[in-house]
Structures are given as structure tokens and as C-alpha cells.
Image (tube, rainbow, N blue to C red; front, top):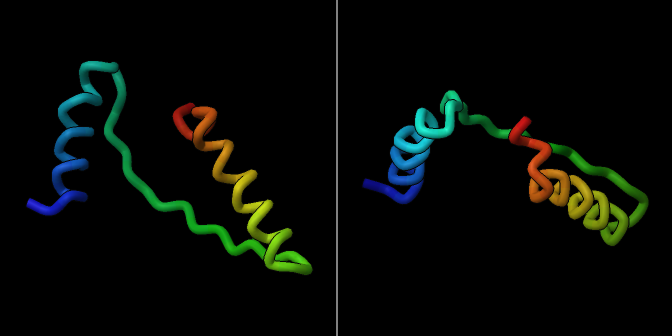
Length: 57
């Protein structure tokens, strides 16, 4: 079993214990700015939203 398959199986095991449905998805973003540094700063800002748990709502 591959690592993604193991992760998916583990999430399906834990979701009912937490009263949650198991949902999966991908959220691609195209980030354009005047410079690469500005684009990476925006990417970091988007990434920080996930680490604060806003994706779990």
C-alpha cells in the first residue's frame, strides 16, 4: 500500500471518531505577482491559513 493510500485509510478510520465525514480534495492556486519574492510571500500567507485550521471549518 502506498503512503497516500495509508494516509487515506487512516483518515477514514479517524473521521467517524471525531464526528466528521472523510472528505478529500485539492486546492490549486495560481499566484502571480510582480516578483518571485512577492509570489512566494503570498503563497506563504495562503499556507498559513491552513496551519491555523481554517481549512477544517
